[in-house]
Length: 493
Image (cartoon, rainbow, N blue to C red; front, side):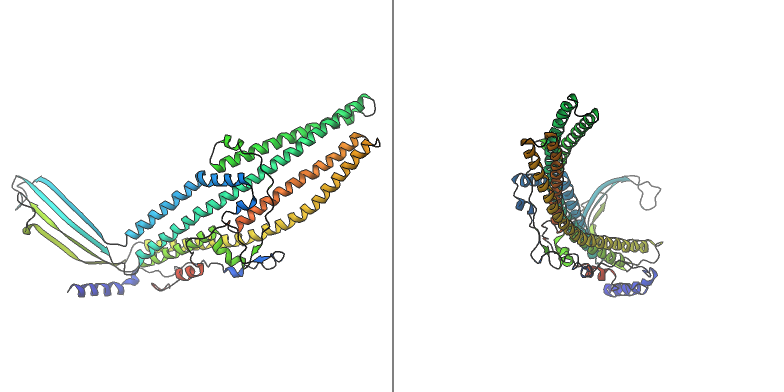
């Protein structure tokens, strides 16, 4: 009999399902096909290799033990990683909550209460205190006929996986930032060397100019010019000193330590440029090698499941509930056959009118999916262009460094000749110091270019995923798009 009642209830609710309609609601976002992002012309000048991906500990190839130790320290102590870990644990808890909602629940309750029932209540009141004892077991199970709760759990699981990947992305970003700050510290020291040499040169020029003015050879104009050069050199030296302090402070922050930790960092040695090949089939392969892309794809998948769950709210719901227990009013033994009671059976509900709450919720989930797709598309386009731009920057820097090396060599030769002329009594030392200034300017520019090259190397490594290796395969974004727009549950009209 109960089976017939349940079948009739389901049939009636299906017939009335059109009362709450999803008509006109659907997501609009479409993930970009990676193969549509062409890179053949942009990467025509580099070697393409299927195996050309950074290693997980890519920084060890730079051969600097101090850098290795600093990155290890940052990965252990930086507070931002603890924040990312906390988000991941919170997402795991959300997944557990969603999974628990799919399962039956059993509750046990009981109470002992005393009440005085007045005689004004017919048939019940006797003017005496009565004790009511109660114990029951309650069972409830939502059958999830349309898979809504399962979809909610899958959405939470997708978000959990995205946050787990976010932890890896944070580690990759942190290691790259430490390396870049380390490069900046090395450049700050190199710049300080040049400013110290320039201050020494300007001071020598000033001393010689004073001698010439005293001898009546030069005027006060040359003296003031020399004093101006000294003052400018002192300012450059102070700026270089400050850049060292700033780089040390930046490293201390990345290490999660106080400012004194930065002062303990020894002067870095110049990091060699890391010659990198670009992986073949770059746009497609980036999907599995960049943590931010993997996380974005998991969020697209989670948003598609959210839409599925929201659609099921328009359908009739059936659940099974049962309660059984013992009750006794007044004295006597609660645990006896005549005290027992029970109630069990299916129940159904059908949304007919809710003021538009379900439609608004589904519209919100559609918008959430479109937002996730837009973020995925943005991340994919940016990732491909970052690789191309960093590669172009390295190619340009190579040309600039080659040209600047010729400039340094020429300036160094000019300085050598000027010294030789002075030693031979042909030229003055003041002329030689003027040539020396050109060499210092050329050396300062060379140090800057080398720092830019090392920094761009690190950026390219990060753009190629920073050695990320996904432990959990990411979903296909195109599949998520198809699922989000699927009409398998309810046709959009």
